[in-house]
Length: 167
Image 1 (cartoon, helix red, strand yellow):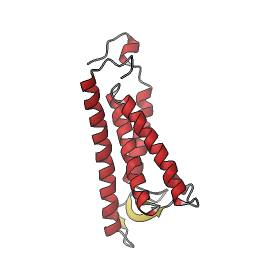
Image 2 (tube, one colour):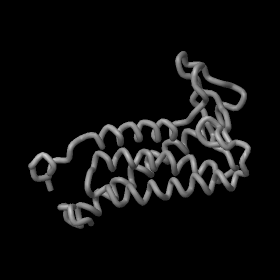
Image 3 (cartoon, helix red, strand yellow):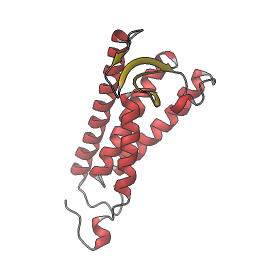
């Protein structure tokens, strides 16, 4: 805990456990969806209107950046970033539950994509719109968690307003 952290070690441990559980649940949801997509969608997309289910594979990162790099470089790069997010989430979770939840879904998405990429050097994508590259649930978690984290960072902490934080 930091000097400004007023939570007890027990509360901090529970908050960290909840953050890790949410990250694991997000990763599990995406990996389960990827397994389903690999079995149900090869060569047979499902048209749902605005969003289609279509199997695609991405050897690069966002928008296929780095798709010509060796797989080990992309895996190492994404592994370092995922580890950094994990350390940041671990260190900040006891101080703010809402931001911890945002970091948890970012971490879960990053872990799912890293695990998927480690298997064969590419990420399985299965969500498609006509105007955006094919993506997956992990990508949704990363983007939405990022937006939530930024929005929550704009909030003024309780102690900065002169109120004491709830224990």
